[in-house]
Image (cartoon, rainbow, N blue to C red; front, top):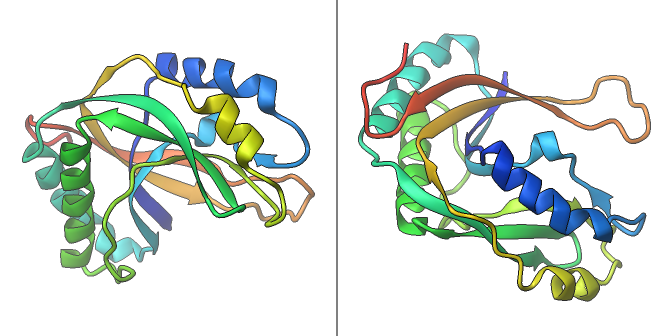
Length: 187
């Protein structure tokens, strides 16, 4: 199973972002579908089924040890000419701590993780082709400021990669586990 730990913004936050992004959608970028909008905390890749019970228990503990925190979608950035994203503001230090705890939970459960990097909160909006200038999109979204919400849950998400090879086919995401922050571990 191909999985990752994530914070999933509420529908109201995603609707605000969609209203800001919709006028910019064009064919110069491959735009991420709204159901795929999330903040990846720890990407685990392919995880063996026998590891999942321990991983779930460790993620539940990580969530339990992390207090809920405020967050809002904020601004825009890019990774070269390849990825356009919106960032976050608010409880970024707590979100970074939750990302570190999710990464540690995966490692302790036996999931081989990539080399650890400092967490950068970003939600991918679109991917470029390497030559697409990002400046028009950056300028258009520079002042984007979403409404604050309270992050209260850590999610484990399965990424179902396209199997058919049809043009434009995208991964489908499915929440396979969720644990409340700062509370008792969920069943």
